[in-house]
Length: 307
Image (cartoon, rainbow, N blue to C red; front, side, top):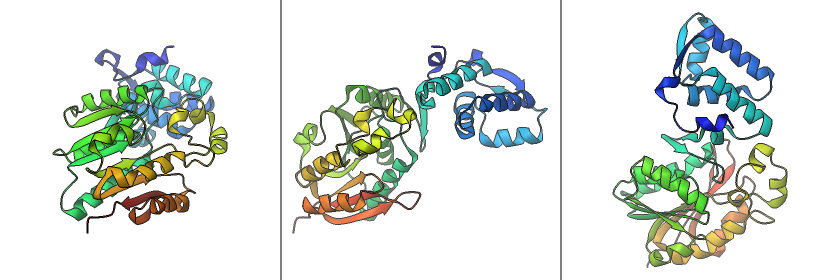
């Protein structure tokens, strides 16, 4: 497929100059074919180097010339494949901006979401409150490695352990780790939740996780863009969506260091159930945190401290 040839950064030979009017006319024509304007503008920004502010300026000065990193013909091929197969643009271009990172993504790996960025901020808050970052931390269900890379860059003197049961995900996380020169700091482990971390049980000062949490019936109703292309393994988690949260909560008291913190993302309507699971497992200081839309989407808890 022509669009798949564009994964990764375009070569300098692909740079072309066009007028603003040509680009605006092209954009209008493609949106008449279908799709969301925000998605097309995302593609223009990431793949062609035309950000939203530049687009607004072109409307005022359409005669202005600009450079595109990717020719319009190739951008159009990506857009048409996106519309025809309802395939995520992130997979088609092979990249996804997230926080201050640009992550490589591919089918078989969950596309990082904006709300998950808050887990990094919550972890940073805990580090600041303690006066120092954790020396040893873990990311359960690392996927693309987004959380693990962000935490490793936050605490460069720490050691991170990133776990996933998917070999595809670990290959992608390894590629992203290498891209940011974090291979020495970040160790990737294959397996289910706490099991690969057994040698470090009782030593983990911080653990973060964005596990699968979508109930089966909700997953079946997701838009095809997500349901048919992103890995079900990273999305659905049993009838009520809480299977992964149960597994993580039950192992946390043994795996966490005394006073160690666990930070979880969950479905927007699972807050009460997630908090109860953490409390029932014997964790303390259990609390909910809100996402960018005010939904209780995160749970935080701490292992009991040594008296």
